[in-house]
Length: 541
Image (cartoon, rainbow, N blue to C red; front, side):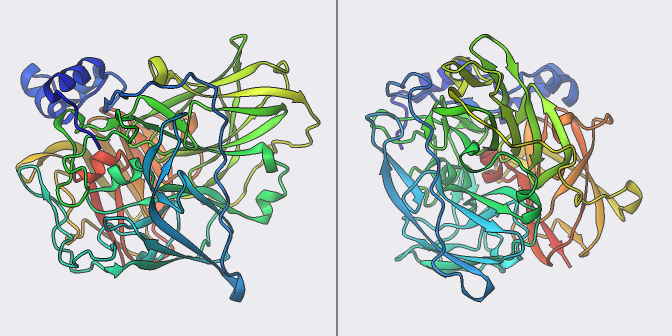
């Protein structure tokens, strides 16, 4: 990955362009102005991160066809379980037309191949690490036993990597990859077992290595996993070619065609972190959908099911579907992170934070053949305002439907069920002599237990933010109870595993810690924040 030729001027340019609250702002704004945290942050713009500018010519929007990730075939289906094999390896792909880009991949593709599985049918995925650094795989949204959950120190070491070399040196001192007495290291391969005893949903898998999650995802280590069941199949929702998985991610490109990323150690071996201007999060100026820049997809004048994942490191989106004549189309939400809602919720504008997933129906029936519907990002500017387009190619019959009742198996937890209430703050702070992102004033330490709970306990968590923080809980789903003392927003419906905290906002969630005992995580899914300390341990006993 390239460094800017003139870091000082590049940094000034980034600071002038970005709509950002960085760590320095979060730490210094109140001291300079004398404002309280909430008053100061309430005035900040709706963005956390700094944008890189690509150094290669970018293609026009809506010219590249939308690719659909291949579905991985199991290597074995015997014994009531499916087995898959995935090799993590370097590859080169043509993401921008005429430009070759080196990537880190699952099976040579970005995104990696999609795994489709059935509820309650266990699978094992054998990952083989042929990359130059250790890796970890986390199935985001999976109800997974702790040994297969992808804890950040449970590394798969590449051939030739010394076992002892698993700690790092960060800015101003050691990184937080200190010794973990519970770490499980394997060499070259590891089996991850997923029981999949969970509601049908769109999950995703990605690298989760300590201190280096953000650059690893940026380089391509992400893929989709869809869980299905008979009840969902019977609803009559759009299916087959009218069901589209859409992994949205932003990237930036260096002059040589590689993915630009401001890593302090471009080899991603020893020193974690990013250059100072990007401490709040790394944003790209190219919007990719399924690995293609601003793609277009040919559709029938019919209903389509869009399975949307925000796989960006730090970028938030507010999505709207706009026809060529300026009409806004309904985005009918039928599902959230952890599966179907009880009943549909209709949106015209849909906010989506990093790692959130939304399952929506869009109906192209009333759109003239030959015209387009553009999916736009209201939070973007310039090229980042555009996401993708749909070109209506033909009239077609459509026997799909959107039932008034989608699911009856969502858990119902009442406030009176909670055995305890916990408070957590997500804020910028000092870490090992440098800047970091902290939970409850503490940076992540794998050797420290932050939360101990009992299997089956229901808890209410109150989460408070300084800037944007998408908070993700491993293992469990949760319901949003309130936002800053007011009812949840319409897009908070359903069972979630990631919630978007906005600046100076407090959010209440309720969950039940069921499934499995062991050590799990909760963390910010702004991947740069995660790498710089914003994780904590949950021990379920």
